[in-house]
Amino acid sequence: MGLRCLLVEDDDRLAADTARDLRDLGHSVVRAPRLDSAIELMRMQAPDAIILDRMLPDGDSTAAIQSWRKAGLTAPVIMVTVMAGLHERISGLDAGADDFLAKPFEVAELDARLRALVRASRRKGGAQRDAVQAGAIELDFRTREVRREGRLVPLQPREFKLLAELAVNAGEVVPRAHLLERVWNLRFDPRTKLIETHVSRLRDKLNAGGLEDAVETVRGIGYRLRIDV
Image 1: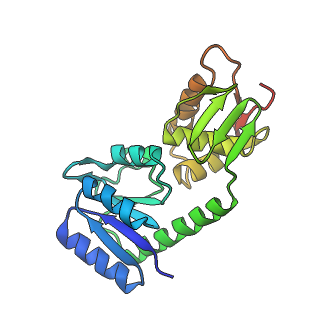
Image 2: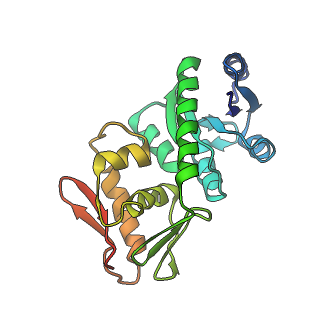
């Protein structure tokens, strides 16, 4: 079955070629040349997946993804860009993108990635609980709110996703490789302080007010969310 795709691309020729090829593969495609028009189409079309150019006339789409996720967007987002360096990939994934594809790309690969992301999203949506309780920490997946001992803990989208992976495995060690794949969609270790930096920020927010550290580092393996604090 074809997917409902929103293509956000300001290059008219590239957008036309990509839309044509995706339609030939059985998908329906609507196109927005700017971020502001993309918002309107998202409200009207409820797309299964979004193909999003990194740089658009009205702004850098990484900031837009963050605001969309906070507003409740759950559809998978593939970011496409000529800026294909590791820093750009990580910043896009941190903002809330689910995958990253460098220009120029083959539509067959785009199609395969779209289908895989939507399958994963539907499996997760069907199995995911509305909320998770891990000790004194509560995660609400509907509102994307986190509370510890009843106090609201404001998190960025990537921090929420990181905490969610730890929370659904609370009390158990979650390996670094698992977090890289599930939170950043990276199937390799970038050999940076990516995870450590995000865990540090997450700790600062969870432990605000002098609370005991809820995230335990298991040296050389990964991290564990404690359920005894």
